[in-house]
View (cartoon, rainbow, N blue to C red):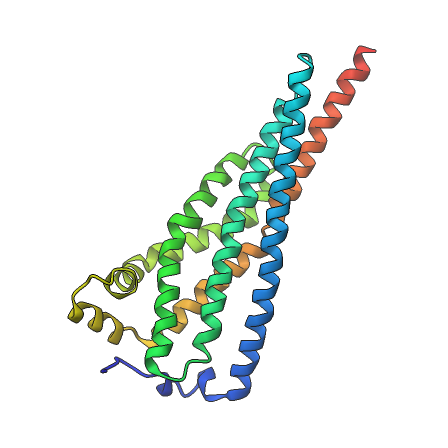
Length: 244
């Protein structure tokens, strides 16, 4: 096969340092394990949140005077926020699993196999992550203070901008050889051979950085939402005390 460039040509890159390759592989394995734990934690949080919503709904049904609409609305938003960020963690799991194998690749085709997988994940992440995260963010505005939303907003915007800038390139790989295997032989082959190792590793590492940064600011909005719940509860307590 006639590849546009070779992983062997990247003299200054990690492929030429066996120690660094092993270090990256080990770091990826640790990150994957950590993200698997995060998936379980997010699932439990969503389950607990939904259970509390059910409790409030049952209390309202039993007592016509009870009003938990604000709490229920807030917890539905919390559950949705965690679900969207669960998508983020699952995406990171997929990307980092393929990323690990990129550095273990022994052939040009093996490298490009995993790189193409990540290109497809990058392309799909716009619809699967960026758009729903943006929709949840709009619902957060007004519910929590703007300062708490700013870090998440900034990292979300950077990821969105990156995907828009490279949309055509990612789409070409996805549609020509990764997802659409019904494409003509010549079309698939040309797309695979023209996937630059040097270019792809730059895009993949940049994408990884944006995902990691978004995950880092993940806990800020939930903390603000918890404070919002405290405000709702305190207002109800003050109202009850005033009526005594």
